Image: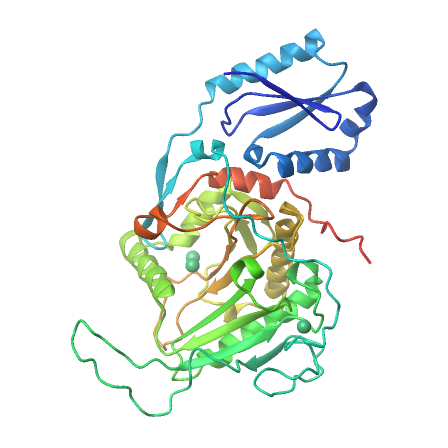
Length: 434
Ligand SMILES: [Zn+2]
Ligand SMILES: [Zn+2]
Ligand SMILES: [Zn+2]
């Protein structure tokens, strides 16, 4: 193991050539930089600067010590850290089971050392006006379909002008020509929900009160759409950022409600029902108590919700919001629980933006029990956040090659990503902007 020295601003760094996850990196600071050690804010900035420049060290613990370079005492501490690191070999490649889908994912921690030459995304521009006359979601503007938005001041929901689904018109489609060429009619309703009248905001920059209004709207939509006899499932989701193919930066999400239960929620429903039948217990209640006892993948929590990086996460900074109380959907939440949901969503969104100091892109969505009129005692509702960013605000993970043909794979272990998300501030990095 070759020691490696380099300068980072006025910081000298000593690190081994390998990157096992618990390796401690010692930073030697000049004496006159000792104030950094005493101010948490500076230490955080320093950590962040190192992550930005050396993303492959994202899962390392950083410690700072002060003094002239390499005095004997400091050298001894470094050699102790390196000896310890030599004993902690990088975890071997392994696969992890996702009990919600019954699928495996491959984890290859040793690959975090490989050089990156892939595509760099352009981070989303941050400076936007509060109102954009060209935006079809801003209050008072005309949408592409010719409808005019009202002067809304709270979350505003409307039917998508170019919906992927259409309501039942009483006509069945053509019959299946063969059992291998199976066709079924699919009907439904697609709605758009503008989170805020402000074009320049996002969930990370809205107040908890404002986010709670979004949760109120989700609950009302789930109840209203789910009560219809022609709707068997309500999917609430958000696609955020150009890296996720979202064409409009105005803060908004979508609701697609259809007759049948779509593939992924149907799979999760089957797996949860099978677990309940086999073990006599709820899969996610049991998983949550396991995670709370271990603590290593938990990022934040309040009285009603826990936010964690799932053991089987396949996107680098993927997270799951889990309600502590067993329940099938947000229809059952009372006002205090909705406030608690808005609170964890806001705190998570701020940490995400702070991770790479960018408007963090993601796909986020609720998984809830079907609204097909049947009982679903095994369903424990939850929210998935599936963000694509990997090493910085501009490097995205692609699910291609082996992932498209064999199984999903990740490099950074989920625990390392949880460590990193946990270490971030809950004050937005742009909080002091006007
Ligand atoms: Zn807008
Ligand atoms: Zn449960
Ligand atoms: Zn799910």
